[in-house]
Image 1: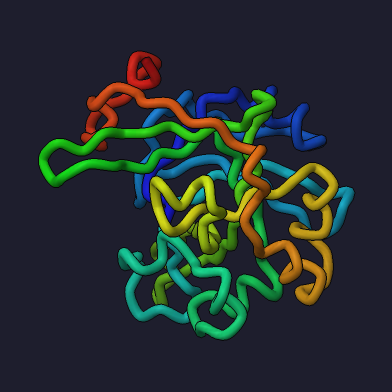
Image 2 (image 1 turned 30 degrees about the vertical axis):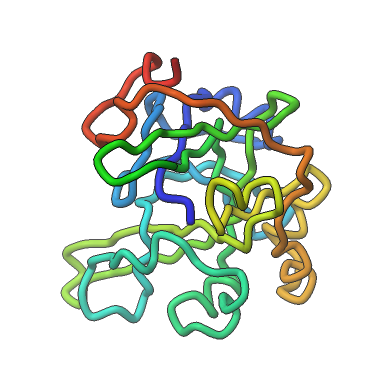
Length: 218
């Protein structure tokens, strides 16, 4: 599961890191991104068209009767992503990358949860595998662009904190995930090596989605 993450890199930093050409949207630094909130994701129909777009976290399929995400669509399980109606079409045609500077998991008893921040060992941005879709009201009055983060079984190191973790893409895998055939993208649905991430305990203020700011990472 991935239920909260950090997106504090600027649009220019993402533009450089992901080799994005053209204009980028305006968005603020976020240290406590939660489901239903809007953040930047990377899209590409082909290798030359990478771009940043703002989308809400919690995938709403285009065929949904209502423009509302359920808890079950914030993450997509790698094991069933190609079969589930909500995710099958997005996996085949609408894959994206969710830039993140870290993600959170919690340990400890209810009421005394300890937040752990997971970041790349090499200090680079995380490229989380995602899917996206666009829902439009029948009367055309509203359009909602949304995404989900793909998760898989945790590697041995991560399993001491949680039994699931996001699919983390390496630089050489980005093009395949964004615009390669589904069969090739499916081969990337695996946990990263145990050497990829590092972990540290951060402020318990992260526990409330109402809190934001750099001090959350202390």
